[in-house]
Image (cartoon, rainbow, N blue to C red; front, side, top):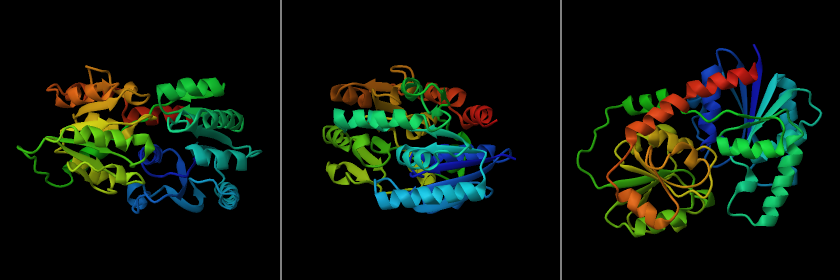
Length: 348
């Protein structure tokens, strides 16, 4: 049985359900080991999220912020884990782990793949000089692995420009997990409630909480809910916004059951699992017209794309929801089964 070693600094957000989905979906065929780093939003119940056959290794030195001391320590620990676990394939996820693992394992003969989950140089909150430096870094690091596995079509098109060995395996939603979460306990469906618009994710620059707050403040008759926590929570000042704080993925799904509209104000995305969940649950989806969002949502067919705030207001207030069409797309094209089948062909 082949051993697949996953390495990531961020075992939370949209990265967690992708890695856990691969491991849980394919652990009958492969032995999985997951090395993960230090972040405040990593769930405490990882042993419940992953199949018991998956080995989890916590590296406190593997952090998001650059630090010579921590990075050297992380590299040393990753190399030790590779020596101990003897993986056949190493699959590296996200930017920071992508740096530490690829540099640290230079010369290691094991097959290595890298999934960016959103290239760092595509971030809209950075200046052009920094983005150029980051893009040059990614081009250099691409030569230190055996291929880039892009999680979305846009990421794949970018990956092809920096590596000759790029493949596309789109993120897939564990629809069975969503169904079980909704059926876990009797959930009373509210027949009458205030129209509720929600989003889910870390409250940070990528998700653009400033715009979320502006939309909420201009639609005072609606209730807005942000499921999550983050460094920019102070930007959510409108009195009709509720911030839940960190919740487990299961509780996110339960909370969303009686909400009406999923709103994304993101400035950039990879291929968002939170949007997939909303689509699968049949929610009206109103999302910013950025990469990732516009791969999943076809305007006027499976939801609404908006380019300006007036269009967002109009879409939130619109009667059409496209819920059934959106759910069909997730079932047919973005399910966990489809994703695992493609990874099986890559892992061999």
